[in-house]
Image (tube, rainbow, N blue to C red):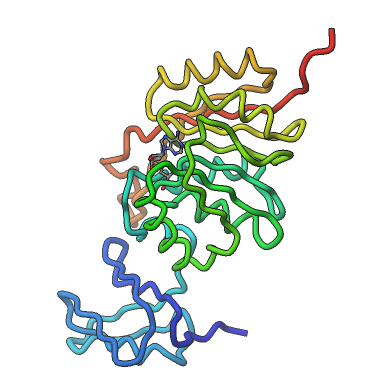
Length: 260
Ligand SMILES: C[S@@+](CC[C@H](N)C(=O)[O-])C[C@H]1O[C@@H](n2cnc3c(N)ncnc32)[C@H](O)[C@@H]1O
């Protein structure tokens, strides 16, 4: 059965690959664009995927927002981790339904949104953030994506320790991840995953050094570069411009303390 748009649902109005608008289907609401206006309440009762026209005749498609849309359309308080890196964090980090994941810092909550989507319904994300104002932004973004109930937002400095124990993963996007490595070892289950996203190589080097002396193994560092391909008859080729750098991702797994 197809999904019907109900009052209160978020909808991604797609004009083309560069012009999309996230709107909430509410009665009386009108979206103004340079291609005319769209009566948002006309969407209520239509199927996701339906075509709608502006008063000037421009055609939009009413898509159901994906996790990627919620992340890219989030209200930003900080730099975010982009979907290409999040995709790798989820799979290489073994984040699954039911996983208990500690995260720091929450920031805008872009990564938190994805983590919560994958751990639900029985898993949890415990997300640490030192700046209260970012937690408020993240709370709104998580609520909009419908995953707030799977997240515990904590106004705490993670360098002082991790409250949780026996967790499946610790995921970091903060300036000093190497300081968290001993706390992560205590908080993780045996074989649990440590994941750290850092923009600079010196952060990576300090983190990997600390992982090696704290009984982590299978330490792997990667960088993900995505090259889009423009597909058009007779001129299919890579796009001229691409994102050159976002960050490096370090993965490791907890081994128990040596018993030699
Ligand atoms: C780049 S942002 C995280 C963005 C987030 N991953 C996202 O995708 O939206 C880094 C965040 O870490 C927070 N932070 C830095 N040090 C911290 C600490 N010791 N404990 C908790 N949060 C910390 C900062 O306040 C900032 O909000």
